[in-house]
Amino acid sequence: MTQQRDQRAIDAETVAQYRATGGHVERFADGTMLVLTTTGAKSGRPHVKPLRFIADGDRIAIIASHQGAPKSPDWYHNLVANPRVTVEVGSERFEAVARIATGEERERLYAAQAARMPQFAEYETRTTRVIPVVVLERV
Image (cartoon, rainbow, N blue to C red; front, side, top):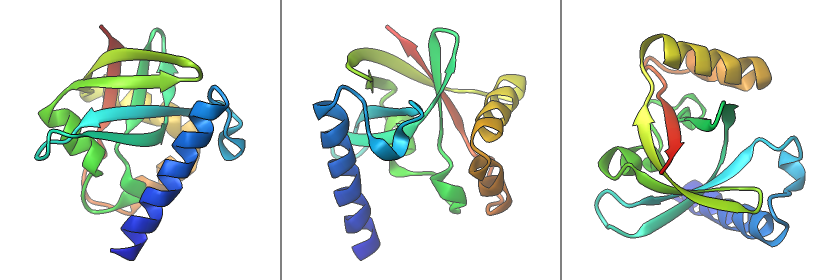
């Protein structure tokens, strides 16, 4: 539980810095971070998470890798239950609808993220689950 609390503190600090600087966080200086707000699947409360992303035209893809853990991250379960989300990219904030990519689209987007950030290729080797790719489309 301590690791989870520590991660929440790191996430909160990262989001605060992101919002205060219009999207500039030193460790994400390559511009590959967004802030995702989901609605809790059980609680109905908002949950905020900084995540890596890849642009795909005017859509955004995020990967529910959980660093190769055996189960998907909580934010993934939240958006499956409640696909309407809020996305912050830089100083822009907008509503989006999340959907799970499948087939060729999933493979293409995952490969693009792994080419950009090789640790995503490693995450696949750590788990037996198919790591979900989520596409966020503006509403």
